[in-house]
Length: 42
Image 1 (cartoon, rainbow, N blue to C red):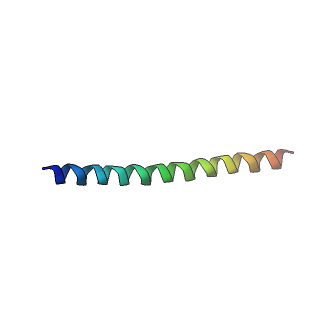
Image 2: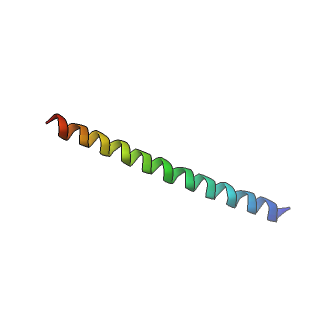
């Protein structure tokens, strides 16, 4: 029983980590595109 809980927590942690990486990467792209738009405007 304890082993199943540990495995479930491990899988959940990996899933959350993967999601966070994608979110941070997307945020970086958004910030970069805003910077490029500002450069073009100037």
